[in-house]
Length: 268
Ligand code: A2P
Image 1 (cartoon, rainbow, N blue to C red):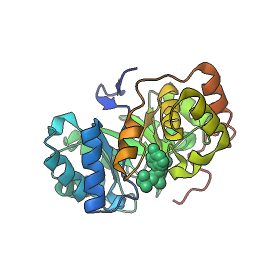
Image 2: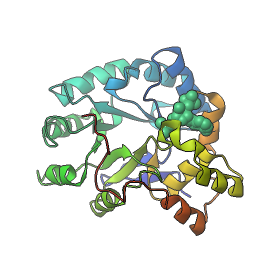
Image 3: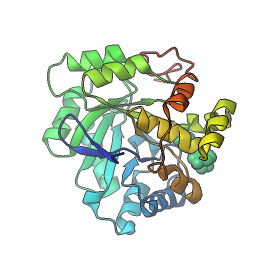
């Protein structure tokens, strides 16, 4: 399996990234990013509201890995007014000239409110690609109806237990790549018995099975961990395949009815 895919705007994105939501600013975040880069990750996903962009930037600089070899995503905090001004702040904190991907973190104030500013950020070269997060089918349609550049990514909560098939189908029809956040259910799914049985059968951990499912279902996947062994384990998913029966058994864990919504309990 390829480890990167091409987005609709022609850029390439690594399929597996470290998500740093709920990773503490400072030592915890710097260690996690350093361990991820040592393990082979080349994709880090942060956000303005996570409050750890400075740590992400420091760890990247200290790693010795060339900036152009690392894919960096950050997200516009949509309670703020201007995506360009906020991205300039992110770039200062990260210590880079440009991010690879800039997402509207959630559709606050309506799905189209930030989009002109997001496009300006891209036109000015501050972000190579732009997209959205936590957008459902109707919200994507509203952005697409504006007629300018469409989002190339929609980052949503996604796992076999939240298999948002209808939303994924619409994204794929518009060449919008789906990124899975909380692919382990923020850890909650790891104790599931059906998952454990599949993991036992294929000789992998439950976390690896969930991450592999995401990859085989065509997603970009962003597991989070602050432990070195788990960070490495979560990246070690390119050397095995889940068979059709196991994929189908995982699909059947869905509790959303294949929903077109972005979340069952939106906080925005
Ligand atoms: P920790 O950060 O303490 O390692 P998600 O990616 O869905 O947000 O899930 C992240 C949660 O799952 C965190 O609580 C993380 O704990 C835990 N986690 C991540 N990877 C693994 C793993 N390989 N084995 C067990 N728990 C994991």
